[in-house]
Length: 118
Image (cartoon, rainbow, N blue to C red; front, side):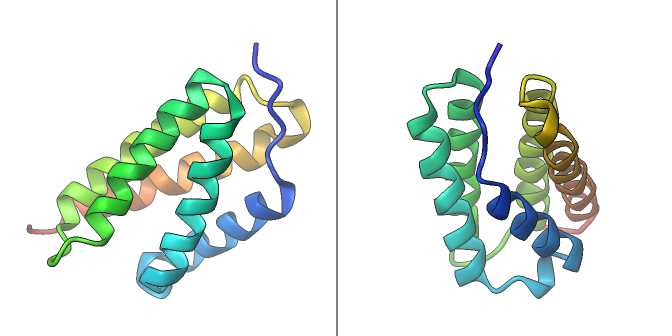
């Protein structure tokens, strides 16, 4: 069972950003946030977090594409949400709620984007 402790301030910042909605997050801020998480997860040595890091790479590619594809972004966010929610059960008890919140927000936002035309 993983006992990886994630940076608490980064968890809170991510939750607040996601609560504001995707259209209120500048691409540069989204890229900075995802890059920070990706590096944290790659260094963790935890297979579940490394899987999330790979999917973050997919998200970054979609965010930097010449044309944003809402449904593709939605699928990626939904997968990240599922992976994050699953990881929450292995996280330290004091962080499980925040990690589940991020997973739930990613799932909701991903679902919304999948409803949009490509």
